[in-house]
Image: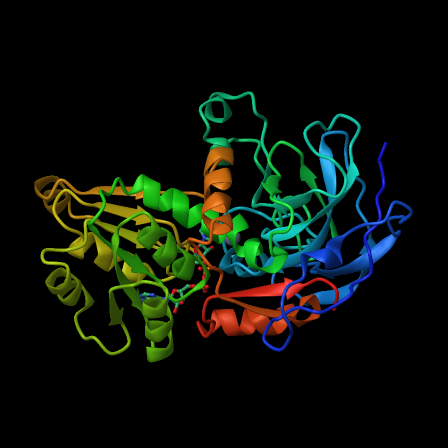
Length: 380
Ligand code: NAD
Ligand code: ZN
């Protein structure tokens, strides 16, 4: 059975591309509100098919789930992959995408503990996992064979009301800016975990390849906050300016620099100690295996469809290079990544648009034109 809660009407609008500042008071609730039968969502029936902004039923929370009134959702490149269906992993269809949702708990399934109505909650890529297999037991929940994925196998956050497993949903402190925290729920957690996987020491160089995008702009800041020197790589002077303003010491523009590996080695005096690959370019990933420093670590995070890289056995052995994958993060990574954000060590470089504008955002993303992250407001 669901316990219901009310959400107050909006009293002000956000800063955004063209709006005023955040006011946490707008998400205060009243006790008489009833959850509507229908809501706005963006739905697609087939991969690559029309992205329809329309009314659909509000989902019901299962006994283990909370119902979250999503206020904002980040738009991740993974959402574009899910819509296109370009990975070797089928999505549910029809599908509501989205997996960087921030909102307010408005319903509790009967077995839920640890949440109350009115709490701020984050809906992540990993919506739920079995919690009893060896991988879950050891904190590798995202690798669980029964993982349920928001905006992929479970209707996600491009809707006003979304269900999430109470164990995996992220706790967000009351009063947090829900628009700005949204990208932390995938991009932030993912890059923070990837940086931990890189086994760096303070003062060492890390290259962020794809630094001007959604994951990259957060990776630059987490890396700086963790005490690493950042060499950012992306295309165009706008992205260069942005990543430098976020803490990158050096920037390589791959659209103008003829030999990226050589330049990366020169700038970092022998190659960066680690490379975090958050671009969607197989070529950039391949190059990172060539310019990483001896004994360094290449972390693969971006997921270009059908891509593979070739590592020379001789070079990998002789240089003692580690090449590894990193896939989102677990509950501890989530708590820590949110904590960096709440303490003001990491800011979200966001632009706000309406949920109905998702098709346009996908077009811009495909063209590689987005600086930082788009966040959609589910109210229009
Ligand atoms: P994005 O589109 O916001 O950013 C990608 C950036 O890569 C862009 O700024 C683009 O200009 C840059 N780029 C393109 N070619 C480049 C090159 N040759 N060298 C350097 N930079 C280049 O995408 P995003 O939302 O940050 O996601 C990036 C990738 O990460 C996607 O494939 C997404 O599916 C994947 N992802 C993986 C995980 C995980 O857990 N491993 C989690 C989230 C997203
Ligand atoms: Zn994502």
